[in-house]
Amino acid sequence: MKSLLISQQFLPFDLDQTLSCGQVFRWKKNESYWNGVIKDCIISIRQEEQTLVYEGIEEQELIQYFNLDLNLKDVMNAIRTTIQHNTGGGSDPLFERAEETGRGLRIIRQDPWECLISFICSQNSNIPSIKKRIELICSRYGSRLQGGYYQFPTPHDLACHDSDSIRECSTGYRASYLVDTAGYVARDPDLLNRIAFLPVEKARQELLNLPGVGPKVADCVLLFGYNFYEVVPVDVWIRTIMTNGYPDLRSRACNRKECSYSQIADFCREHFGQYAGYAQQLLFASRHNIPEEIQTV
DNA sequence: ATCCAGGTACCCA
DNA sequence: TGGGTACATGGA
Image (tube, rainbow, N blue to C red):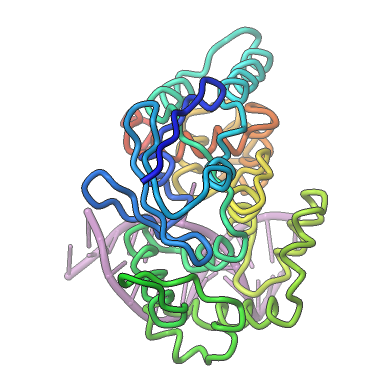
């Protein structure tokens, strides 16, 4: 076991918040340790206040994976400043509450390929189902490591099977999306690397070309896989929180209709600023801890 | 049992 | 562009 004293510039950091907030699905907590796989390494890690105790990874990779070198205090200050600017010095109780309960939550540097497949799996499912589904896929198609751990399957690992096989991982109608997207990436192995260097709108367009990738999945990959922090994935929870909690947004909806995806995302970008994706993730993480009048109607 | 979940593709006006 | 609908599955 190695240990890392989390230096001041890397604080706040909360491992539990970070690994259980629905951005990544393969980590499992056993007693106080989180266990997971990055590339072909089995990682074990726990946090004791300002210390990380871990094995299976180098310190630099750890810092990179958890984005510890992004100054989270600055990020939160930037969001708060934008909110104040937009509300004429006002406040945002929903965000403040989310920030408080989710303090130390970090958007990680997830492998874009794993992120892409994970969020294709995620559509129209709850988080426990998604985890189970991804675990089945990894144990069926990923290379075996020690102790019952598996690498995430490569594009070729998935593309060389048919959708009937993948359907046995309880992927349902998503099976063909998974095979087809895997084939697309397998035929253009550099695609996901190139996307990292594109401007966000171009990157989004590239992702939207993939089968089974719509606006929501694309935005999750942009935020969690490529760390375009201004991107705001809009799922049903965010839709509910934003439309019920932000009257200025609701008033934008055309004659009694629901706000569109882009209306919600655009409002978040205006309201929260260049780190709107971070604000979004804090709100998502607080979804079960918000006033009832906002959760319902 | 019924509803719902980190939605998308497809069709139609 | 925007609205309606089918789609598989399992968790709550």
